[in-house]
Image (cartoon, rainbow, N blue to C red; front, side):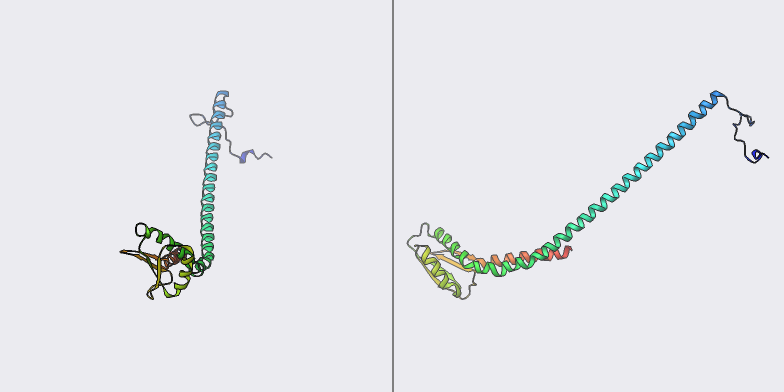
Length: 196
């Protein structure tokens, strides 16, 4: 027994609605061309969609990678900065004060030379904190032949010195420099903490 009566006949319809068993050769070529064009167009559209999807996925992945790298950089920078804080604080609070006596002596000698130009017959008065009096006398006696006298002023800090000759006066204030460095470091690390 044949099953062909169960299946629909897909033969081409004529203009008046009649079915024909076969297609003419010319209409068959046109239909093949039409099918080819439709298939080609559908394939092209699928390829374009696939390309756009792949491009969007790559762009999304790239943006995510950049965001991850940025986070990693900021995290590493924050950890490095916070680990450097104790070292830099020790430099400011321990090393700079120890070097201050040597630095201040060299700076005083430079300032004395500048002040003595044109005033060779007057002695320079050097006012320092009482704790620095002996150390500074020792440094200056061995280093210069410029006439000077060192006096103690209790109001001055360890890093402060005043040089006076006639009406001129110069201040050397390493305490302010050290304090400025310390304040700048504190502000820097506070800003790092706020960013993270």
